View (cartoon, helix red, strand yellow):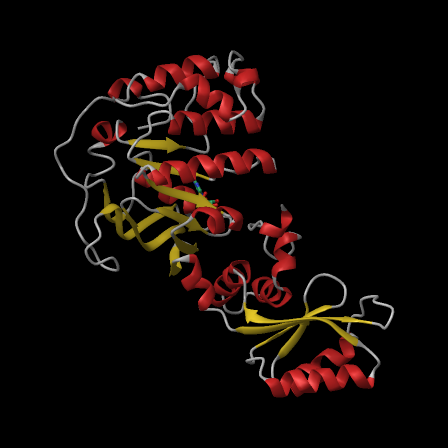
Length: 371
Ligand code: ADP
């Protein structure tokens, strides 16, 4: 059950049906079911009782900062790594014991792929396609993934991004019923990311189930039916993207400008007092002149107070927006909540989305606005 190496094990049919209804998804058959998964490397606890359910026919994104345990989880699901405890069912089977049987039904994209350095993309993808009943056209897939120009180049000579695309091609070519993709868009340029996202969306439309790990919120926003946010080996939140965002508090965002339209930032000495007067926490919100008030519903009284405050200083409320947070902000909040006392995370949460985009305080996450 590796991307390329075990093709000879393919072709097994299994009689066992995928898992039945389970906690959290009444009535929904599950393609992946994990309960209380544990894994440690020496003294380092990497998975600390992880629960994960992937309903059939859905795209579930496993989202978390670097080191959260995403790759370890995926490698255990693939049977590539053993666990130290917990229950795991992949299409109703045990990933270690039934590895050969699962090989023909699960498409895997590993971060380090087990691909022979001498192999060439076209021959590898063609070889791999032969082990599936209804494969995609290998040449079309290479073309689609922007690998046609390198189709006859040896693997060891491919760039990092080309290796990544080959790994994805090997996972996709069999059009398997379950796909497990580890960071499928990592290291790709925006055009390649868009191609990969539309490929994944097409597979979902064709009824495939997909588990993808990512720290790219754009992957989640554009693809995922459900998100499982994990940190330090545990689930910190799970739900649809909309459900996660709904969990974040109300926000008031505004941009201040002078009469000539130039953006004006509130002096840091005034932020605290104005925030307190407005009944929340006021902070800069990235771009010049942008501010966000968290922790207080933006009711007419606070907006009137803010408008008054601006008038006294001859400032314009150039933009004003009341809403809940974005998925990105919610993600940062969740990670900060999961790590009380961690100042880096708290600071990242206070700084909001732009901290993440700039890679400050949240090295692991890439925001949509970066694209
Ligand atoms: P993620 O994919 O979310 O970034 P990983 O599952 O790769 O997280 O890693 C989780 C933690 O386990 C990290 O702290 C990482 O350094 C550690 N780790 C991963 N693989 C090994 C290994 N083979 N031996 C020791 N530690 C490891």
